[in-house]
Image (tube, rainbow, N blue to C red; front, side, top):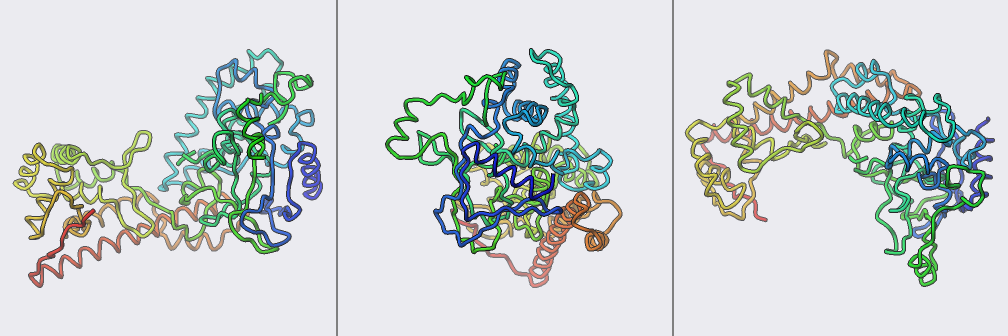
Length: 505
């Protein structure tokens, strides 16, 4: 089907489902970049540019597979995956055929890359381990939940339509296109709303769900808003007209509609920023770094201000064990934990974030500071823990004595005071260890490869973008550590004291 034909078919389908799309919006279909939405005239804040009935959304509740899904006890994204695979298996017989023909077979997320591609393209990045874990867990989900369902379902299902490949494809579409609709429907595929492309920090159109309990529900973000991580005939037989629109209007919804004039069964796309005629209209999927964008949506952005690099606790301990015994490191780590400090935790790992400007978290600096304390000072800190009035008081008292500063229990620890010459050297060593995860190729080689790469080589292009953005942060991390070390050297050479007060709340 030609691009213009598929868009015309989608527009006819939208009209048949009661989806109202403003004449001020136009759809553009580019073979390389897909569909985008542009303004045909100036758009203004507050303009309602689309209304989408909830019954037009593909959810567990509206799918023809509802009874099968709910009988199996499936919900969330697992249940929605079954609903999506079921509707796709019906082809032109699905009530969503006009919408589904517009979707790609799958999104180019790392989730659907081969293991070889994941290992070769994402090695060293924040995604490498996460994607391999995702693939393992999702395969287990399919084997334990989807496979038995195919052979036990009351209606005849084609196993090939529910294969592990189709399941991963469905999960990729759900990850990149679904929205939280409301408490009843949960997540679902929202036709039209999923055509607006993302731009970081530039939300121009906002997706809202009018509910009887509040004027608008919270931001109805895409599936991966956790970092995260959006229909028509219901019942097991789509041809039964009595099953149409299974959602039952409650009295509260009827009362709400009569008072406000808003339809609680309708989703809206509302402009939240001015857009000039001819410009693309963007949604935003959240304040996400490139690792999260590639993981959830399959693309990256240049100069993304929300990029981060993580330094795993495991790497810190690797550094520590290169200088001290493992027993020494465990003891200092335990002491760090006893003052109620920990890094960020995700699944099975603990880590420390380095922001896009190269600045590490206070928790990492504190751990390194404790690891490098002289034994007598460390012993003093150990004793003081039981009597401290505040979590940071223990470290604060040591800093107060060392730097001849005023300490009070309402004070915060300053990062500058933790940046001793030894801590700065430790940061540089950690940067080297983290950098080594990317393999033998230098960042300059990555940059040259990106310059030679074509945007159509999506996997290579966006993986290189991720590698480069992370390695740029490590460069800034080194600069941060080097500047801290130079500052300490200058102070030592001049025999000066920092004489800094701790920050006040």
